[in-house]
Structure formats: structure tokens, C-alpha cells
Length: 335
Ligand code: AHG
Ligand code: MN
Ligand code: MN
Image (cartoon, rainbow, N blue to C red; front, side, top):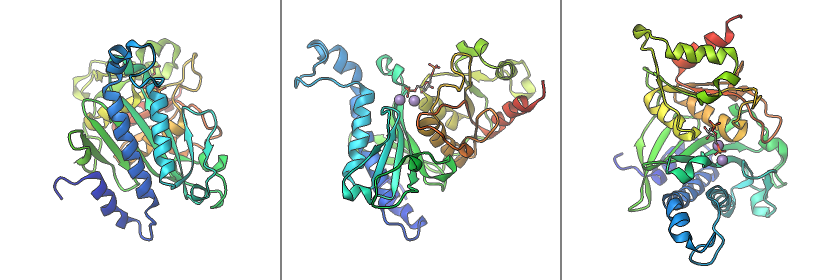
């Protein structure tokens, strides 16, 4: 179908899940709504602060201006709660998970985990930022409050995951385990259209993304891999190209479209790396694998890691399979 909207796509793909109750569709619709609100707010983030913000931190209505990550967190929580389809939410912005107490929510089959605003250091400098989300079926009993075990599930158990990128345009990219599809937002009519059907990492990949400032405090294997990327070896298209935005969503999205890998290793400063397993690594690993790529930590597949803590961090290497394979060969090589 030409000009297919996200709404139409969600309805069309519901038939892939026989016996589905429409709850997952409602979750995706609420994420779509919150994404539109955050996209709108993101576009005027600089304006609000530097031009409208003459009255200190208050906006024109006299309300306290919220930081964009708090705003995004509230919008996603509100949108998901209003549709009464999730029993709980785990967010990078909240110390503890939220269990909705309303009976209608307690009957929700799903929990959502999210990084409502990824790349927050890029907000004030007009650089792309994002939202990452992950959906699990609860393992606790229906009709009760969501429990910790509902959130601490392996990535392989995800029923859906995705991200929104607020960039030169706003895009929503997601998967329900049946490939990856990307939708671009047309702000003039407020609609997401299917623009990137069945996304796959291209065969040819040659971008590596890492904060090289941390190289001397990273392991010798990572130093070796980066040296490998920079080696002059035209027959294997090396040196590879370095690109690092500092917003995981934006770096991942570019690498998905152009072919490349993103690395956030453990360092002496951050012994488990910086990125959170449940809000960042696991959902993007789900997307990566669905798009023919790979996502690993130092010695295991990201999706196989059993989370022990809500805010757990793990080293992340994610992207095109052939480049991750090259990295793995170095990581597995004896010293
Ligand atoms: P967040 O804004 O959600 O805290 O995430 C920031 C993350 C990620 O988006 C990015 O890739 C990484 O931090 C950058 O870290 P460094 O500045 O250490 O390179
Ligand atoms: Mn983040
Ligand atoms: Mn964040």
C-alpha cells in the first residue's frame, strides 16, 4: 500500500498475531501519541529556553519549565496509563518501577521499559536525540500489581521494542519480532507514514562509533579493535569511517541505515560501561537482530543476559553482523 500510515500499519499487522486482543496495538498507539508531543516540544527546546525563557525558568503561562527528559518521561507514562493497557512502567528517569494501582491497569498484560530521552546532553546543542522503549508480557498474575520480576526479563522475551529519533525529521522505528519498520512523521498533518519498510543493515558496513576519548581507559582488546578499524587495508575497505554523535539512538539509527557498529565498552571509570541493559541495550539489541545485525556484551549475546537490577549497566557492542564478527574475533583471541 502507498502512503501507509502507522495507524493503518498497526491494524494490518495485528493479523500476524492470531488471537490478539489489541492491547499491544494500543501500547504502540500511545507511544505514537507521546512521540508526537515530545517531537513538538523538542523542536522548540532551544526557543523555550533562550527566547521565551526571559522570565527565569517559568514559561509564558507561568508554569515551571520542565527539563525535556522529565517532560518526555511524563508524556510517555501518561499516554500509556491513559489507555489502561500496561500494569507497570520502568523508566531510566525513575529510581523504582511504577505499578499502576487502578483495577483497569492491574488487568494489563504488559509492562513497558523505557529511556524517555536518550542523548540528553545533545538537547541544548540542537543535535538529534531519541526515546527507546521495550515491551514485555508480565510474568506475575493478571489483576495484581506489577512486580519486579515482570521487569527483570531477558531481552529474548521482548514482544516489541523500538525507538523514536527526533532528528532532521522525527522517525519511529519498531519491531514486534517480525522485521523492523520505520515511519517518518509529517508534522504538517501530524501523521507518521511508513517510509522504511523491512529495515536491514546493509551488507557493506564501514562505520565505527565509539567515544575515543575513553580509549586509554578501555581494555586492550577494544584498543586493538579500534586500531584494526584505523588500519590502512584497502582490500577490506579499511580504514573505516569514525562517526560519534553521543546520542545512542542517533548513532544506532545511522549505522542501521548506512552499516556500522556502535561500541560503549567497560572502562576503568565505568567498569560495567555506561548504557543500561533494560532501557537502552536490550531494546536496541532486539531491533538490531531483527534487522540482521548483532548485539553483544564482552562475552555474551545482549538478549541472553538475565537482568539482576532495574538500572543495570552492561558494555554494548551493536550493529552490522560482519563488523561485530570482526570485533568478536579480537575479543575471543587469547592474549
Ligand atoms: P542518556 O541521555 O539517556 O543518559 O544517554 C546518554 C548515553 C547515550 O545516548 C550516548 O551514546 C552515551 O550516553 C554517550 O556517552 P559519552 O558521553 O560517555 O560518550
Ligand atoms: Mn540513554
Ligand atoms: Mn535518558
